[in-house]
Image (cartoon, rainbow, N blue to C red; front, side, top):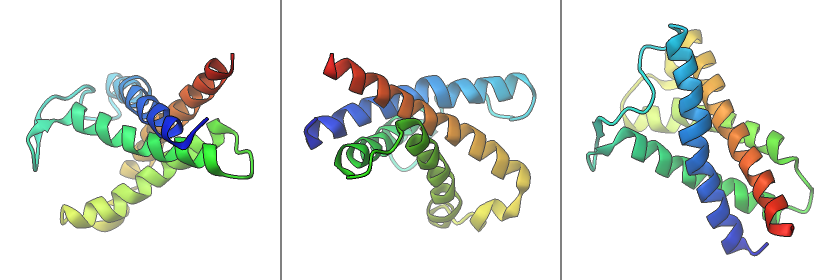
Length: 143
């Protein structure tokens, strides 16, 4: 698979994973009363005022593109599900550091363990789902 194709397939896998796995996990946690915000939120977010779901899907695509490139270019064969899960954990860490600093929020979610486990579960599901979709795409592109 060429690197361009890996990036594009990764982007699509990331977008789909946000819509299915990330938001599906949010829906399950919301139904169980474990998260306050419902899934598929369309409220506008700064700085461009795009719907929150569109913003999450775009950034999921960016992360998925990175995962697709990583899996296509690394010499060692990483299992896509494991690489995706690790990517989801990295998403949480970036959110608790870089994004928090940009938004002038407490770093590391103020060490709130409730926010930590929810973020790790939701973003872990996103990453795992991206890996699963990339695995399915790899098999589909071969056959």
